[in-house]
Length: 189
Image 1 (tube, rainbow, N blue to C red):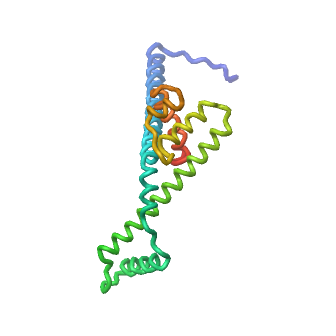
Image 2 (image 1 turned 120 degrees about the vertical axis):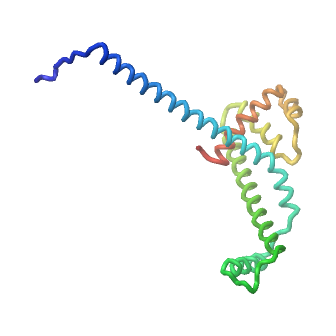
């Protein structure tokens, strides 16, 4: 045999092969569509989370500046009490007020981490925009900064007037900037 054998297929066999191939093609197409939808949904969730974090930035920063911080001795004391509680020391249960203090310190640490993450993401985005020759990218950074980070918040209308663009463009620019910041804050997913 030289590999040039020929097979003769009936019309029914050809129809079956075509039907199997078309079902497989449709399934592959639907699977790819579902995968793309899931990725798009995840990216939209990341942008939503990023906007929420950015919207909370000033409030978290103001709250932290108003709060007092535990001294190292207080932190050590709280840790010992927490360890005693974990080990089942029934004689000394952590009181409600101590639990509240621990929870407040934990929340403060979480807020500090969030603020540092946001500031790092903003710094990286700013560096990216400054290195770029795109004036549009630089404008997007200014808009994002004015909206979420600057000491005094500006409205979309004020930003539009400052940048001499429409409010619609401000919303579009903020969406694009938040997609980029989402990568810095939450990573690629």
